[in-house]
Amino acid sequence: METAIMGRPKVDLDTLTDVALAARIVIGDVNAATIVVQRNNQRLFRAALSILSSRSEAEDALQSAYVRAFAGMAEFGGRSSLSTWLTRIVINEALGRLRAARRRKACFDGNSVLVLDEYRDKLMRGSTAGGSPEYVLAHQQLRQILESAIAALPLDFRLVFVLRDIEGLSIEEAAAALEVPQATVKTRHLRARRRLQKLLDPEIRTALQGTFPFAGEDCQALTARLMQQFRTNPQLIAMERQEDDRVAK
Image (cartoon, rainbow, N blue to C red):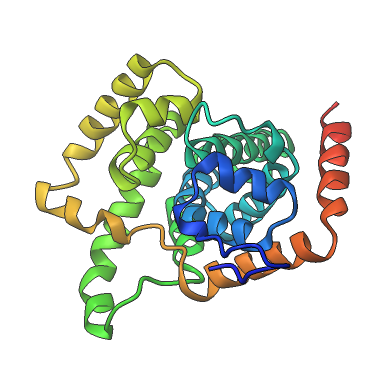
């Protein structure tokens, strides 16, 4: 809840539309930016992680994507939800990093096959799911099985599966985020589920919400870093975007 400024009435940011929130971010409203980050951190982190397979790289990509999104927030016109718009930005950021990593041949072995043990170690490092110690112990093995199976999917299938089955996006939302036809989303999702069917029983699906966690201190720390940058030096965001565009060329 914003405090009243110069006699203006308080504004309940939670009730604002996506377009209204974006407009407030454009004029430097830190509270609006904080709400947007907190609402989308989990989904965007999972999307980045499904592409990059490293917690640290996914977090870096997420932060860079937010910087680019804040710099271009004036371009958000509400044709899709703000969440979908942000998802598309973080996917493009992560894919760009993946392409660069492939060129450097730093993230893949000689056969371009991801090492699942290394993937799982990176995935499990850092924040953990909330709940009691009993909950963590009961689900640790299950989560490792799930995450290893998902990691084994081809990138296109893995990303669609994360967006649809873990994040719960509709076909329309996933297609908009990935910028592909809805039929492509349906096909990739079906093939991903068929590949996983041999490893995952129906009851395992209830545990999917606990995979790829990004919460607690990790989420708060990223939010704090972004808001400090947004609050103290908004010009830096525009400068970083210009530098990114220059390097890309």
